[in-house]
Image 1 (cartoon, rainbow, N blue to C red):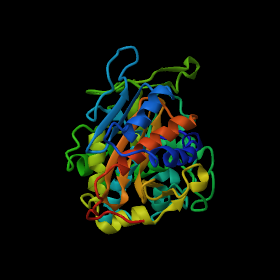
Image 2 (cartoon, rainbow, N blue to C red):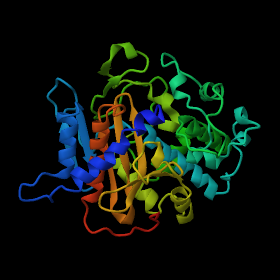
Image 3 (tube, rainbow, N blue to C red):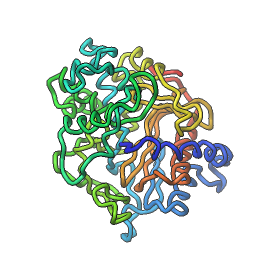
Image 4 (tube, helix red, strand yellow):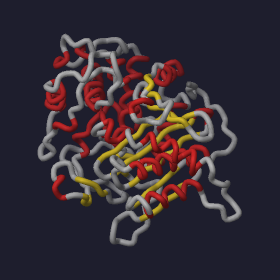
Length: 381
């Protein structure tokens, strides 16, 4: 999940320039010309110090680097599992919109109707989805040496007071999706993880996607190692952080998945298999311009999905994610171009070059497609 919006977002402004300069000018494949996706992944490994990088578009899987430093093993493929961090938020937003479509929730309901700690607050479910609630970020206040309840996490946020009045600004906060998960639990009577499994993961046969169990630190199945600063031991510097308390990240950032499963989720969401068309249109039309907050010019945030411009025209709707040991850009391009997922086994925050090359790899993977075709239910901006 994003731990601090500016720490992750600020390098992305530089990414758009890099996309235009490197991907847009890349020659087509064939005749010995370099693959533009491979070029960006190689830059991440060779110049930016990323141990491993992968891009998967459904047609092609490109990798660079190693799955574990010092091992000599190549980077895992599209079947490799990794923590998808804030790319969990589109799953949570989709679950909310299914409940809206079924009449179980209303977007302008007060969050306090479902979460007693917010009783008396004017914050609505719509504002939580759009990151316009003003609820303060809880992630930077957590004691990572112990587990917490959702109520304890929310109390940390509320103790800081609001960042702004509800609906008056845009501010990325994991607290928004923590509260949405609590609302899902209240209206369904199910743990949010169980509900998302039953309504999204199982129907789509996303068998490689799972929620970590309480106390589970490792990753199941094939995976690469992750490297970064452990939040509980920052004094150690960059270390192997493959083991993290993934259960704690919850509805904001707790899912583990694979590039193949993520692309299948995006194809299903924008292909009309998860929500009625009007619900997808709301997710991508009721948006806030976030271009002045460090994101590429023209970026907008909707209901758990963010649009980013593409060098080949149009945009892709998806999400960015990061944890101490990995970062990801994943989404679905407009015009039926398809879906792509790119992830690296290191954190991009604070490294403009690393962020630029990651975004450029996602851009290249989405733009290097056959003639686009419009898919049923695909949202237009």
